[in-house]
Length: 377
Image 1 (cartoon, rainbow, N blue to C red):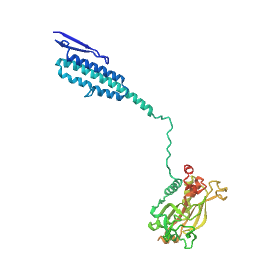
Image 2 (image 1 turned 90 degrees about the vertical axis):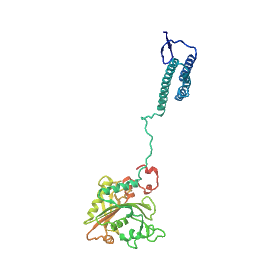
Image 3 (image 1 turned 90 degrees about the horizontal axis):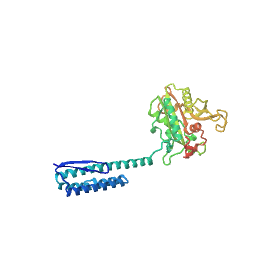
Image 4 (image 1 turned 45 degrees about the vertical axis):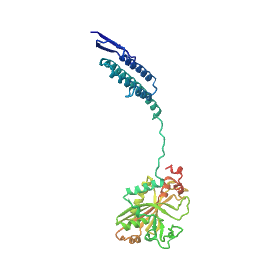
């Protein structure tokens, strides 16, 4: 018996094949030719892998040599024509070459993948030390935020906000004047003061939020403790102090044994909370058809602290709202017995309070949509 040892070397990785078999001699036929073809394809594949420039190149090389239609599989199909011993020898060589190429392709693929990943990370990296890009954010208008602040203060004092249907902007004379004890010949009813809706007799754009208290008292039994914010309209000449529409907040408190002292206590507490500190106030006697007695509330000028300046006209005081005890005629009109219940009402202009708190000297600034003004608040 003869033993022949065949030693085959490949450049990468270094492989040593030791094939041992009995009664074997090197034929010069198909086995040698197939072995040569495999080695040539292996050399060509290695060269292509070394010259590859990208992952796409690696994928194409894999398809060219190792896919089902690749060159190695085409050679392997010829194994069926070899003897069993030759199949074992050539098959082992083909499998080893395939494994070597897989290893080379994976190594090259990983190299390109890491390189491309690093380039992408470098290109798309975020420098967290840089300041972010400013994106302007929308926010509430100063009149909206002032209204919300005032309403929130009164809610904390136990008042509730009436539903919108009880405070319509398009109102009838019945609620805007008649039920508020306003005489038929009162100047406020003239077209010089009030906007009447054309083609709809007796319908107006409300000139005050006071009509809301009538709606509430008609629909709710005492005790009643509500505020009603909303827009009102008056036929005014527009200037730095007046506009033909503005915003008011109406307040109403009806219960047993309510006195003017309760009114003063609530409003003084509101002044303290709104301006951030207790401020001197004074109640001046006034007249409103729907309250008796009536008063106007002044607060010490926040500009000159009572010494007198242009803003307060030299008086040291600024008027901020009207108020008073609900008139007996108004209570009788809505079916509330004035011998059992009493109450107070007040109405304040949102623009006036915002102007005082933020030192705004022209009411038109609230409506001109000038970003330079609006962005300050």
